[in-house]
Image (cartoon, rainbow, N blue to C red):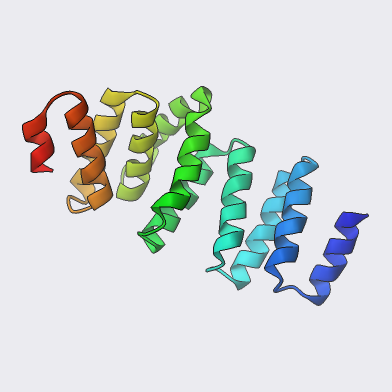
Length: 172
């Protein structure tokens, strides 16, 4: 009933972020995450810069354990808005809470080895899951692609400090 009402309202007001958000959450809560993704995707085609809907999309990806898609969306968000680091933290927290996700995400670094931002995010997940060797390797790959990427440099410095390589950390 509520779904039908929201769909009817969206037909008359297709640019309402509130309606798109509510409908997507109701669909996801009823186990229809693909339908929720479609609603959000259609809205984002018309309004690609809507941060609230992007955040809902990210949350739904995390909730449905679609970790790699969530990380790719986070990488895109960080690429478009370098100040969005706090929003990216939500995906990292959710992924860290799921040990089965960490292995798959680290494996994804090999598939996306041409994207420094994605590699950085994967390295952050590895670091915060105490997979320090994986984190260093992946962050080094990110820095090889973009040596001036400040968040990756800072993360690498933190990793080097953890293993008492202060000279290496200072060079970052």
